[in-house]
Length: 377
Ligand code: GLA
Image (cartoon, rainbow, N blue to C red; front, top):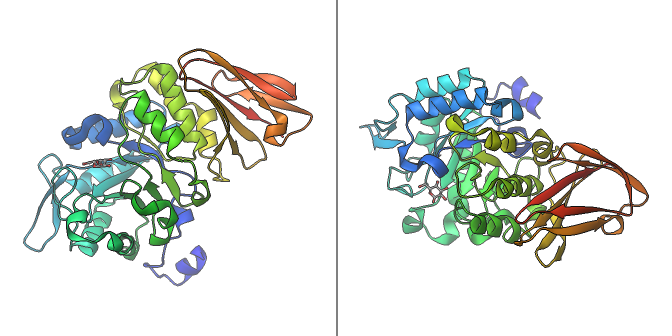
């Protein structure tokens, strides 16, 4: 189909979702750490750090500006950036020059959540402006759209922007942000969404992260796949509110969920500990596995949960999570995983092979922690 599009030189030929986000998008977003303090200089420095820290090599590709970049419209109605962002095109060129992609943020309402200019009644015009700047990713946040639209109009409102983005001829990942209202997982893909938030905003603490990750994603598994992903929100790893162990659980859980991995910390001042968590290639490979199957919980006993995610080569990713306050052990029995005989097990955080194991695998899991293994088939 792509070839037919090229052959016909049809610039507006629809991009297929799976071409845009064949695996869950990986990148960075300004909101969790910087909120309204994000500016041109910070975004450039983050792009530099994404390369120098090894994040880019690990697969993080998008540098996304969240809310508060927006200025007023000019006399022709064109959206302009505010004084924090003197030249969006130049900024996009800079980020592209690093081999990265750049994302932006807007709302279908008259105002964004932070009270800046939204895209209401300027949808096609804004899409064209972003495409002309070189934007590769849009997060489109409901916010004040609730004041001008009925809930029943939500799908059409999102489709309108999706169509506008496609009509620009530039591939732009479309990220829906409406907090999981109206079971968005059931229709997000049909209105052109490549990812959709499934909940309200994450906060930088164990309770928020674990509630979103463990309790609020179940039942949505069937709606995720290449090109369209459930989004449990951006990462809080490295922002200070969670321990190293909890941050390892955060990344592991998001990887098991085949979730978009959008770092939300200051990549410039990142500790080695934070960098090592964010760039654990074995865990990232589970998130990015081309099969694109969202993992699911297969057992829950007290604070202990075992999650399984089938991988493209037939291997199983298995995560043992301990939501409690004491070190506890847990065993994944082969019978529960549909396995028989001996299987090679590799620990993806300790980076060691546990050899060929019979009957089941037993893990000692620290409080709020994880043991994550790959089981060969
Ligand atoms: C909403 C979104 C957040 C962030 C802010 C910006 O709360 O859910 O992720 O984009 O708006 O104002």
